[in-house]
Length: 98
Image 1 (tube, one colour):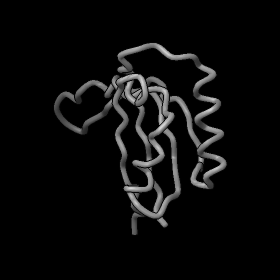
Image 2 (image 1 turned 180 degrees about the vertical axis):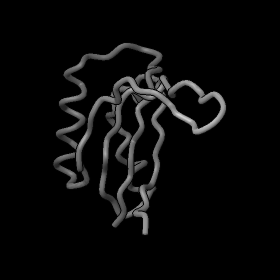
Image 3 (image 1 turned 90 degrees about the vertical axis):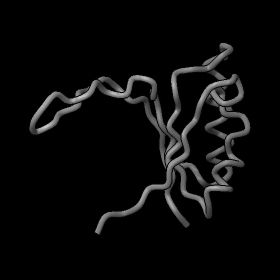
Image 4 (image 1 turned 135 degrees about the horizontal axis):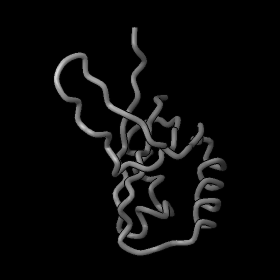
């Protein structure tokens, strides 16, 4: 089993109801893969020298999942309000540092 992040972009083409999130999260909970979620707030980028780029504003929230494979995580996109309404969701595997 591996840990993954769904990085939810702020770019849905069509609007959706906030209650759509509740139903979607409950589906993930029932699947046994859900490990948490949250909104990504404001922040800063820092660099020791030179000018740091601005923060990545297009990513607005995340969902953490525990799944067998990236293919399983992809199958969990069904029902995601941003994905279902034409928006972007990045799927990233998390690896543990040594």
